[in-house]
Image 1 (cartoon, rainbow, N blue to C red):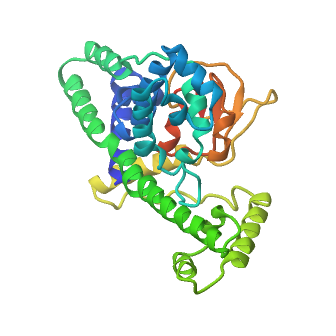
Image 2 (tube, rainbow, N blue to C red):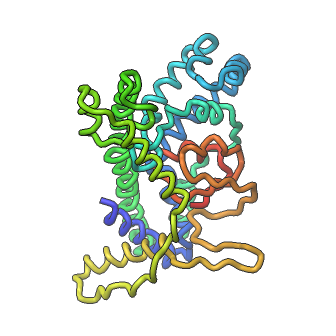
Image 3 (cartoon, helix red, strand yellow):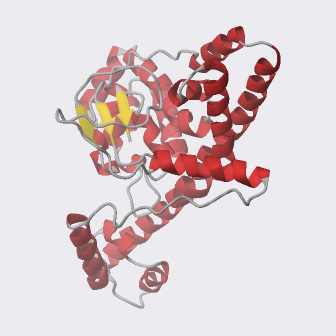
Length: 336
């Protein structure tokens, strides 16, 4: 699913470069907001945040009881509490990476409270519409027709990747997460497990057997938890060996060449190899959007670090799934 989408995006970037002299960052503005799975959580939470910001009683209630924002809002703004509860069940159970062993946003209500209390002066500008209007004003004839065609195709394909990640990964992982936490609570109550969170270190068969009273899983879960802690403390090098030469595509048919050239272009952008730094510590990379921003850097490696991000900071993370986008509404910029 992802590969045809990537090829159509590259078509758009190449057309913008050839017809308009735009770089990739400028071209990708044409797709801003066209991935509902990416922006829905951030957009819907921003609407709730606006309602909270306009009500002094809601702000005071959240500051007084940040650990449970829905309960805090219930006495003073029940309709906002209902809206937030619906948001949590729609977006909060999506895991923040690709593993049901990781915590979901709904398990960290304090983070949601922080986001609701964070000021945001970011306007919902029509970035894509403005870029499209500028391009069409500069083009005519065959160039205009080519641009319109590749833009329409890219906009149809662009949401597919993020919808795919949400529907085939984040949401199912969230369902598994709810099941494993329920199993953990029951096993802790029966004495078969020491901690609820340790249930994620058991296989489904082990949990099922333990729930039926057939096994005690605490020692094995503790061993695996300790093994994971050791591996995380000793991760080893990020890259081993050198990247080989790119494959020769000339023997593929035209359509196959076009698609694979796009895929390899994407890989080269995503995995550039050794990144050079200058004497003053600057690191270069590929821009995903135009402009400049200056602010304090906040490195967020996992969902447990979400609460550390302050409004206006530059969010730096190894990778970000669609579930991370709720943070983008308060971050000043993103480096990933």
